[in-house]
Image (cartoon, helix red, strand yellow):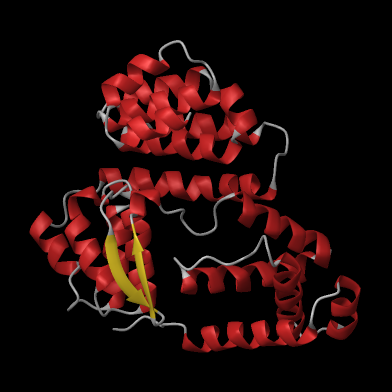
Length: 309
C-alpha cells in the first residue's frame, strides 16, 4: 500500500496500474481507480469502484460514496447519481456522518446538474477577475460555488492568490478548501490567525473529515445524550474548526477537555443548566483548563470574519 501511495505521488500512473492489476484488496482497487482518474479516464475509475462497491463500502463507506459521486459529477451522469443515492439510502445504518452525507446529496446532485446545464455565463477571464482580491467576499464565494470544487483546477493561481492574500479569513479558508479539492500538489506558505503555515493542499486533510473527527462527534452525542444540545455543540465545534483550519485540534489526545468545553458552551448557548465543576471532577480534568479553552473558543467566535461587501 505504501508503494502504491508513493507511485501515485510520483505520478507513475502506468506503473501503478501494472502493479495493481489483479489486486482486489480495498487499497489496490482504490489506488487503481485513482491512477485512472489521474490519467483522465474517469469512466474506468468509476467502473472499478462500481464493480466492487459493496466491498469498498464495508471498509470505507464515506470515502467510497464521495468517490463515486465525484466521478458521477465529472462524467455528468446525474440520473445514475440519483440511482446511486437510492442504493446507498437503502443500506443499513453505518454512522451519523454517512447519514448526514446522504441527507446532503439530493441538493448536491441538483446543484451539479443545474450548473452543468447553465450556459457559459462568464468567460475564463471574467471568472479570474471575479476571484481577484478587489472583488467583495460575496462575489468570490458565489463564484467559487458556481465553478464547483470539481472544476477549480483551471483557477488554481487565483485560489493561491486568495489563500496567501489579505481577504477575510472566511474567504481564504474557502479558497484553501478548493485548492485541496483541486489536489494542488505544490507547497504554499501563508499566514492565518497570526500563524505561518506551509502545506501541500493535495496532502492536507479537509476539515470535518477523518476518523478522529468522526469519533469525537460520536463521543459528543454520547456524552450529551440530548439531540438539541448535541447539535449546538457540534455546530460550535464545526465553526471553531473552520475558523482555525488548517491548524489541527488535539481532539484525540485531549478528548475530555474538548468534550467538556463544547458541552458547557452548548448548554450556555441554550441557557440550560450544566454543572461544569462536577463534570470536570468526574473526568478528572482541570476546570481551569476547560474554562481557558471555553474563553479561547469565545474569542475566536468574536473575531470570526463576516463577509465584506
